[in-house]
Image (cartoon, rainbow, N blue to C red):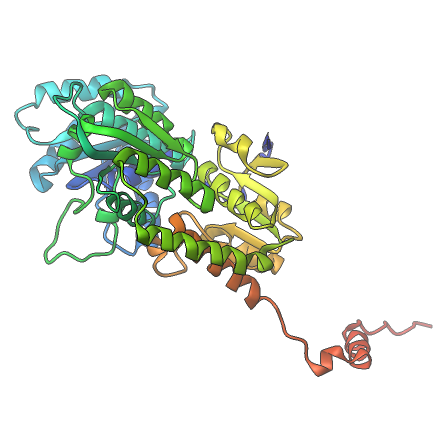
Length: 461
């Protein structure tokens, strides 16, 4: 069991985490016909928008209430109402996801009450559009917690309380924020292989998969439909992926009495075996031949790849669920996690990370702890530490803006774990420098060492 340590640094030198409202907006982007709305200043929205655009290389429909100095002091209910009505008139969204920011949260306003009044007063104008509120101050939590709060808010605000029937083939799936487009597609294909129908919330694979519509669309296009969210109570079971989705699964069980199973990770042979076994039990069908073949391929990849992982020292900086998933994978391959840094200490999954200590901190702390490691594992903001330490960087998580196609990298399931093994093993191999005749010559080595010494200073008489 890992010991969780909280950093006592006075300032963050290179931030690791992204904010809660960004995580909530990320979840809302996985819903069809949605517009995330930041309740705060324009600057709050601009920072999030820059990260989204750089990561996905796509147009992101992100809006703001544009709070000014007067509204910040006097209260922002009028700005919130005006923004909602403008969005309804101009974009006709099916869902408006309101994400609060630190600017308005510090005033202690009753946002839920304000929104209830707006809905009641403007019921006719807002007909056909759901408005959901996620309380996500920037000064607390991280992107993972913002994602979870948005999913909980959608289930609490949209899902019908009483379900008239259960569909024995329909399964609710709640993926974590660290699931890429390719990860979600792999999960869907696996579930459908058993004859089941997954309803995935949020479904970023339908909304952020890089497709280009034939015309300008001011909202998200693709993803989970609002009608599917409303009828989640018809699902016979819920599969939650990642500890951060426990709250959403519990909310669905509370609202619609849908039982759930939580999977901490879907990366690795044993974790995905448990997922496949659960699907077989839910469907009453044997495991399809194509999945058995992919499992066999993964077993062979484990055999081929473990030679390259054995004894390697790994330093990981990531959100709690992603940190746990990757640390478990590397230790299972024979490596050692010598540095583990995360964004928030509130997740219970951190105690299960296979490392002596998990520190809550930033990338400045990560750089100090990573000295002597063979591989750094974090997002693109870790590239400076990689350059200064001379240690290769394996990019994971959000944001990744200096490489193309991060959303299409799959690291879950049999196929995704196989590819992850190959990607990391190839990175290790690329750092191995073959010996040369000059390098093996002891005289040549001594001459190079002598040439690299600084010239002695001349004596002064």
